[in-house]
Length: 531
Image 1 (cartoon, rainbow, N blue to C red):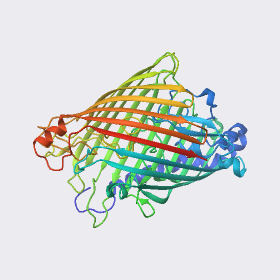
Image 2: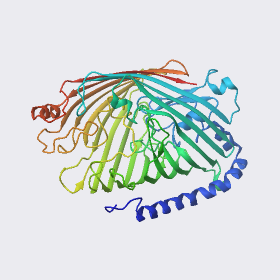
Image 3: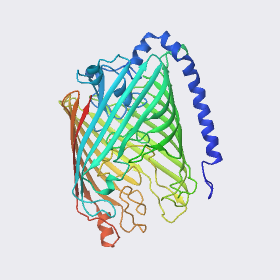
Image 4: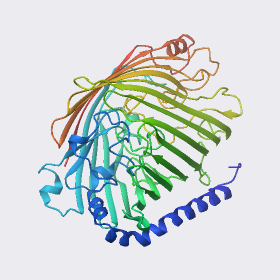
């Protein structure tokens, strides 16, 4: 955006119009043929009532180490599909991002109220205690402790071609300092999280392809979830207002496209649309067992409010490609994802727009042993570029858009110490299943700044001279989840940050606001109720 221009630029309006026309062109035939498709495909009608895009797997068929949105979720628009619309099953999320599908009990609201198969009524409640013994952010002088509450009541309808879903959120925090009480990462009081309607068919144009168009406020999971994902650990959840369409055969390939405005989370008032345009397309392929692929292209453009201080003024084009193989007992699995980012953005709120060129690379390889507890060992590496020259006219800092980090880097609560930006981090992770209802994971990561002159994102710490070096420290993590029943799960976790020389060198240089260099312990325990 040129200086002084308010509102979305003419170029942005043309992009938005082109994107909307593209989606309308896709969704029009879906709406016209949805009812006929349902009548022509009784099997499709049965699947539509389950609330999922692909047939529900039984618990005994579920892979033990399904990762991210793999296998079970396949191409689901988001995980709410598993939780919203099936009479017989519901889902728990594992700490590593995979899910476990369980049979519903007589205590679930669908069963208690005796609702018809096409109607879903649900309630999710999570209570988490967190404690941190040492500071890690600029200006932070002590640890923290808090209780975070998240309540999600929901109602879903999937009858024939018609889809409707409503989900409320009430997210609050108690016992903490003001910096958590007032942040929209923890607090979103009595608000609408999702409210959308749509049409779908299992037999689009008599091709046996599944097609769906939904409009309204929605949450999304795309691919690995590193750029777009529903937050599973954070107390508040990203949502988007707009249109989403999909077409595919679910088991082998799917095309998805969207035009949305990200929702601006307000702590005590109803959320509103952010003045940001976000749109893109995604192609997933799962036909080859040894080589699943995702190909995607996302556009994001911030609008400057008239009379307001400009934000980051992002105008970003983000293409990416992912190649991976599912974990399987006695086999090697792998994943490679490469993401590139070009455009313009400011490094700080209200700063000048700079030319952006940034990138993110992820590689990992794993093996699942044919032993009791099915141990899976992963070796992985993440690199997210940083800004080389803080005084230059270019921006090399990678923007992870709307991707969560909990499943891969660190919990996103009071100890959200690392972000997918300006990092170089090798890691290993071990996951074991002592029983079908218990999963335990161990992870060790080493973190460096990708660029020593750029900021340690999420902490506010920076040495523009680069003399403090780039070694951030060692990060150790242990998590477990125990499904005590189909209605209740318990999850404890412990993280330990052995702070590196970067903080020690900042302290020695007398950098203002630098926290102490004592190693930090973070512990949490959470219970999750699903009805």
